[in-house]
Length: 437
Image (cartoon, rainbow, N blue to C red; front, side):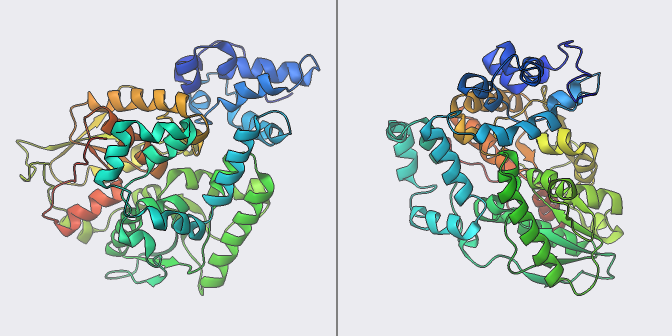
């Protein structure tokens, strides 16, 4: 029996499929791709550039796995095929070179820092907004324009030393964990890791951060680059082993795309951490917020500066990252943690399980399809009437911020750890409202 055999071509996967949503062709749906895989196995089709393009249109969001009533493991099917898509002639020279360049850059924070350093005065400036509004950025082609659109303001923290060493627990130690920082997250949104460390420490959790930790390999894994993924995974495991003088209760990560790959190390590389891997929200929900932390949570403020109250709660809409919801089965945990904050109202997106279009580097290599999905997601979140969006994945956050801005309805997009941190510290500042693009 093969992995394709359980598929009865019922079509339940179609409404959940992001690529089918924007392309509306059978071959760009899970059902159509499974037909193609069966034909490839039977020798009725050859994997040429045309067929490969239909597999490349897949975001790897795994929503179809959740939707399938027959239990088809489409995630395993597409993962097994992706290394074959690297064969010569299946992609254009530009697409091949672009992917090689991205995979030589994104998994290496120091290289990415070096590239971004001269862009610091431009990122988030009036010049950037002018360049976007004038259409100048579109002259460089859709892929490079997509990269520029995702470029956020770059804070000084992104270019300083990464958090490292052993951060003690506040009060009696309840657990000892390692923390994976994430490559893109530590540069484009370093406030997330800083908030995660404070929340963990305030809950009696000791945090170990190896000084030389690199990439987890998620980006290369999602692109079928098996050798690079193994190399990065083994190096990350070694960095934690070398830094840890005593056993860890868990290895945590605050970026769900990373978490999905970290949990697959045993299958992908034959090696794994000595401690279990968990998303930070998954771990905190299972351990439980400490009594002192829960008692210290205070109401947040509205965007107008007024304090949230029972009469006027702060409304926020939750975005489920695909690699969290469909890849790891994590959905209720972040919601339960947020519910501990006084006077919030958590709203749900109408199409919560549909991908936002980020999907690793998908929004850089398939920018038109990703942009349409971003527009759909931004419209869905905007109609919730919430003041801010909650997202636990850096790629999703960047994508959603971009398309909310393009709608002229900018909303803050914040990680659950940031909100818990702000609530516990009683910050007086209201959630930042970014300027429109």
